Length: 86
Image (cartoon, rainbow, N blue to C red):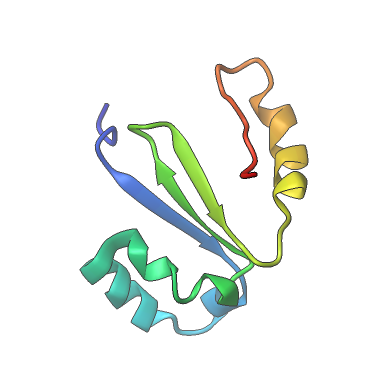
């Protein structure tokens, strides 16, 4: 319940090894919209909307089918739907 109304961002990739202060500042100012112009620099960025039950993956490097293949076993047995954009 504590985070029900919050939206969270997650990222992974090489820019985390260096200074990504500009993105940190932009995230503080614009929220997760700041990921849009820079997500291609990362392995992936993701936007987690717990209130509405969405995890949106932003990536030019990972195929949605690869992510689903890896996530499905972890979510097996939970009330979770996995969908790919058409």
